[in-house]
Image (tube, rainbow, N blue to C red; front, side):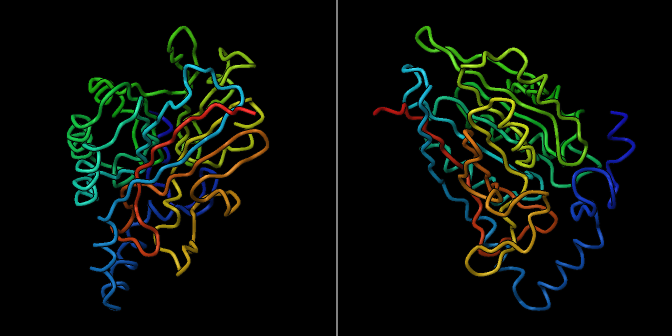
Length: 293
């Protein structure tokens, strides 16, 4: 709470990058007016509501046999209170999906400061459409004050901690860290502390910027978001900015670093301005597969 109060509206400095566009009201207004002047704003709004379902297969050698085919639904960067048309589309898509657990990789609120009640209401409406165990982490748009409400919805918020998932006497581990991008409140060592070295483990992090630390800690899979894939991209899905300190190849989709698989979701919602260009919003189904020679 103290770290939030000191830094939550800071535009320059703090965190892994120097300039924080999401904290600048003037920048948001400038982008919106520029898009309206060019006649692109409403097209961008329509693009932002066209959420698609993507599927990602992950082949793992050490995956326990009982988890072959285990499917994870990832929802990221919902920004619920400023992305309502997209949230309505997400709610419709959820009805036809089959999965074993759901993970929420942060940024539930549109703004980075101020009220969060509207975001919680929208999350509650989506929660009613979700099945099975749900795990989540906080993002740089979220406040720790949201955690009690999220957990009252039976969403297990992982704050530098891990949980064991069991199936037919076998198990894997899922860990989550607090925001590493802006508040720098992550602690990967603590999150991994109780995970056996030879176990299959998943790390949930709002940002993929900690990919090096996650791989060296021994995590086998990193699921993240934050970048929005750029949100406003040039043709060919080339992001103008990822607002992150990381290689561009990690900015969206599946990737690998050393022995760790990773996936960066472009998110279902939109931030700063509720528009998207050349970067469709997504929800993602990750299917774990046992590697067989």
